[in-house]
Length: 366
Image (cartoon, rainbow, N blue to C red; front, top):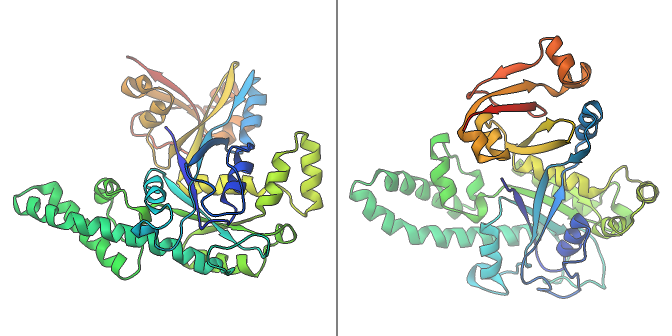
């Protein structure tokens, strides 16, 4: 199961620099001119999780395999993208393919780095991008109304449901409300997701600040945090320049010393990755044995057979049960045998909802 976050924003806000640091590569050329990124770059990164090392030490695993997220560096958007300005059509098409959006906002002053609109205003930048996405969704949905009405009049139940959703979302968009903020019932989610709306994606705002503001942010990032709070969204402060420099250091001690000199306890990237994980509403379960301790990713509220299917489709198809130990019990009782002896290993069936941190062993029959 793959999960990806698209890195978006106006040109020259630091998207490609952030991507380079995230993936510790120079595959995304970072340059001071618009549309430096034309084709989306992709890279997979490990999700930091200190539990992996603890579980592995107990099990004495030969190796550790973290779970991963994919990040996609998407071409910069400009005003008018919904009408094809700049690389608008390509930008919008690429966003449709990601699960969540990381919106990088320029929160630094630097006369040597041009701004496509000639001013530093992260709130205005966020509104520009959101407006273009809403306009594109509006146009997309308006084209679907007449065909859906015809099918609904013909008695097609699915079309009636989708038409009701489309009309509700259109009402919201016309009032400046993105699709993700429209009330959608649980039984409507499948039809809603099928619309592939740009503004249905969850959003994380990343405030790209200069080095001096990396530890505590600045006035620009504070305004973004307030905006995110009003939206029920998250925001993270990073200095993409610092992150890129840290990613180029190979020695871990050197990295730690450099971060401490900047007043930082950890990289901003670690916070971005974890926030992206939360943004997608994901949880982690573990498998562990002598060969490896591995982290796996599922959506929150996934049932045991779905979790088994992440490992292999045969596991889900032939699912019998899941031997389950809670993370805290596994650690406190020093592993599987201790948990068994204490009666803390449970036999869970098909209806079991996986809990973050569960250590699972699946039994199946194909």
